[in-house]
Image (cartoon, rainbow, N blue to C red; front, side, top):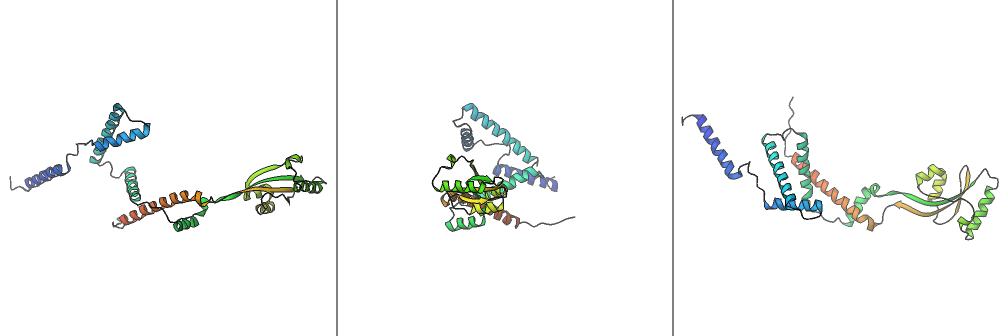
Length: 258
């Protein structure tokens, strides 16, 4: 029997199994380390805002034990193979690890300027015009005279609220102004000096318009800096992950088979 190849094969297999157990350990032995318990306790503290009770910590450890043995059984049975969900999760974890390994640093002013120049639309909002308007309908024959009288009174320092004429306010973008008053008036309003009443016209009305404040556009550099920095760092991490993926793909050879 000692000369039989099958006996030799079984003997070598038993030795390999024994060596694996000695080096790796029994896969059915689960070690619950102090570090694991501390990590579970920290997670509970983060969730509840207080130190967990002994019962809560025991329940968390028991839940971890159940998940761990089920995970190991799933691997033993090969359930992770050809599973699209598991495949995606593991691929995402590799990408996330590659991004986390990037040593975060603060970008220079030049890097922030370049980032803003190439992504300006993400941070810039359309200009908004906070305005007041008094309308004099063209259907009134005295519209022109009334507007002139009103404008003179404003020039003399009269409070427009005391001139017994409805004042309409708004805070609109240039496109919204064009939709409300027409393109010509929108163009004129966008170029008006602040806090100055100006005479404008639509097809239906003679207007007096004053722009009180101009909003929108870009935030100040001080306000933008933390936003730009966070976005730049996130982009660098994504680039690091993408570079890692490409480097891994380059190690493999792909073959097509019918």
